[in-house]
Length: 429
Image (cartoon, rainbow, N blue to C red; front, side):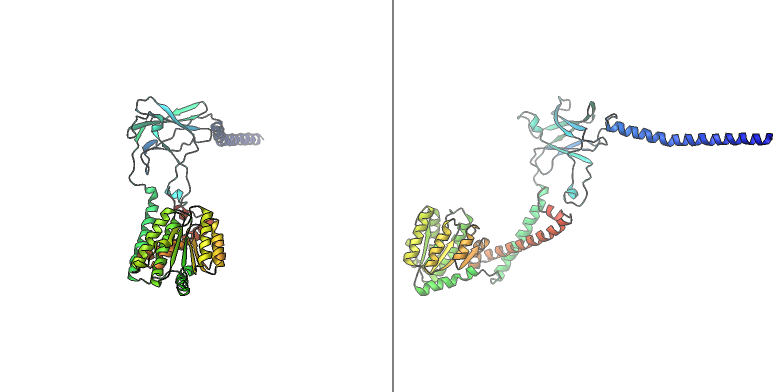
């Protein structure tokens, strides 16, 4: 009996010991978790000290004209929307210091080339600020002088300054490496242009896309010669500084040379005195190149009016009275395009128009036999003259446009799947 009671007492003691060990183990696990949770809550409520950032340094901003200094530092574990960085600047390491900038600590992160190209995720672990120090000092401060910077972190009543004082000097850079892509594209395109110019010199019959309006030039001039009626060349209303007017003058030169060879009559009407002088010289030189300088008549290249609708009325009168066999409308036109083209169509003339005014193209298309649209006007001089320099440039432009179309096509497909590095290759960062 005594033995049974003793065994029960020992069993109770062992059971109590196990219970104590279990309680101690649970406290050892729960207590640290509770302390950690309390620390996190205190951190969110601003109860812990700020952890200052590391790696604060200053250097000249690359790829600029010497206007700014870049400041970088590693992100702090205390970065949050409530915390902020305060940047101080001075012209001497001893001060006096003045506040230059105050930013939220979760902003102004640095992104590298791989991040900008979309090849790597933006980590947001380094802050970057580009600062123009001359904004904070008098104008007599030389931009080549050295400036000093300090950084501090603040949140509410807490304020933690960094002991490090860094300095930097802004310098101008000779070459902007961020625009290296532009240089590569320019060199590549220039190489293509030179290649096709050399190729055009070796092969004068270089293939170009056929343009119906230019193929019909000889037909129109031959018809005018057979009928014994003049050819009328009508300039647009823009001055000599317009690209379309320059292209029209080039076309006029080729047409005038054919007219001289065919022994036909060419009449040119203008509304600008400078365009008039250029047209007279171009036609005169074309007759000289054709070997018939005596056939040139300066009275056939005239200025009929300087205003829009008086110009239209004068040209319409010439069409009605002299009934030219072919009309050429070349240059930039406005509301007068339909009036001129309708009048010419009523006389039964072959009409060839060329303009880069997209608002007037519908009227020329409906009333003229042939129309040069947009860049076809610029290509006309190369097409008619077959000069190697112009042919090579034109062919290279076609290759460049084809390459851009291909890049746009594949770039659109890749961008649809979130791959954007191709679009970033054609911009300057």
